[in-house]
Image 1 (cartoon, rainbow over the protein chains, first blue to last red):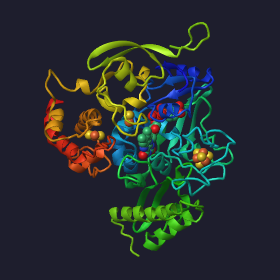
Image 2 (image 1 turned 45 degrees about the vertical axis):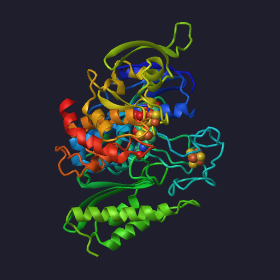
Image 3 (image 1 turned 90 degrees about the horizontal axis):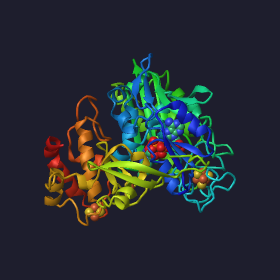
Image 4 (image 1 turned 180 degrees about the vertical axis):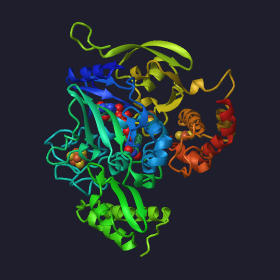
Length: 334
Length: 185
Ligand SMILES: Cc1cc2nc3c(=O)[nH]c(=O)nc-3n(C[C@H](O)[C@H](O)[C@H](O)COP(=O)(O)OP(=O)(O)OC[C@H]3O[C@@H](n4cnc5c(N)ncnc54)[C@H](O)[C@@H]3O)c2cc1C
Ligand code: SF4
Ligand code: FES
Ligand code: FES
């Protein structure tokens, strides 16, 4: 690991200056991803600015009935919050289905969104990788990629984003709030992760040196009945193979609102807008649910060894929407 | 802790660590993890290094009463917080209930994962007492504390691997000790 300076501050402006004025400086939150990648030599910051003494760990209400999740609130605190559990159950479930109790106690809201891919080539500095070393190539395309992307990838990178928490957040139209030296800003989570394009190393729209201060989640009626399902290679303490967050609001047999997002399928949490449009405004029949899953996955381009994910994603969408329909007493009747 | 006035970057820090209610003053390279500091600088070798990458739970300690992984915690970042390692779990020469239950019910074979299992179990029981849910909690009412079943314990303890696969006895020991720990802890 490269040597680095360490600073801790309780002031946002000082944190911003400490990072902006110093080439190679990074914020340190829970450290569960950054410290790990520093050990692997993938990240080598010259200075760490510890942000856990900033008072950004609150979970509060927004005027419109939504929630503000402070950037340094731990994953555990968000998952256990009664308001999150009551109004956005899929968010609590997604967090609890990720990592372990210890890791969730350390990991933060901001760090979770900014965690890097778990592609094994990315973490192995003896291998080429466009995401780590731009232009060096992508060995995963012809190599080990059974856990890689089926949607939205390019030949420059086929990695997936590992966050579970981001999947329900994108379904609920969450917004990332930040502070930068030239003032505050906000980016909808749907625009936060950049398309892969030919520069997979450019991952987010967050300006250089900006500090995420909070993630806001608007009031979403459908979110009160939401669910997260995750398929993984062991029963607990493993990243998603494919996951789905779904929320449903059905009245008088007609879908008023539906939210669907997939994890483990792309370089970012994948909002399944085509499937949502196919379901919204109509009755919830088995045929329509199945057709909605198909229309979303029509764009899937599986790699040599991961076509199973297309079927898995399709089945997960069907299963979760059907379960939610049964929950709301609006049984699919087809 | 940074610029030393000559434009050089300070990559070492003088820190105070409070471990098991004892204050230590140590000079560490900023790269030092809490795990290595506790084991090598303080000589508290009860805490074990399994994977060193957050994947096994052997290095679990309590930080401010919450269970964390000491292998992904920088020692400098732990300054000012109260650390409890396995050496600090017992009081006054007497094992606490969870330790006694591990011994009596064979909650280990080789024992390498045990310090992490014990610290994790103590932290887990506190989380449960605080009403925190787990992935297997059937969440009817967010305000109610879920009952601590075997299924709950397995899920909540999934961050602690045991290569000897002593899991059934670990779960039994935690379940058996949980009522007494809650009183004690
Ligand atoms: C063994 C293991 C299993 C895991 N399993 C899962 C899983 O199943 N599902 C899942 O979703 N995750 C999983 N994780 C990943 C874990 O959730 C992330 O590592 C964690 O959420 C990162 O948060 P952190 O606070 O520790 O971030 P850090 O490691 O501190 O930081 C990560 C990055 O974000 C930057 N950063 C942090 N906060 C801010 C901020 N406020 N503003 C700007 N930049 C910031 C840092 O500079 C750094 O680049 C696992 C991790 C491990 C080690
Ligand atoms: S898939 Fe992306 S992260 Fe993995 S090796 Fe290719 S470029 Fe690197
Ligand atoms: S040594 Fe820390 S989790 Fe394995
Ligand atoms: S008792 Fe041997 S690793 Fe758990």
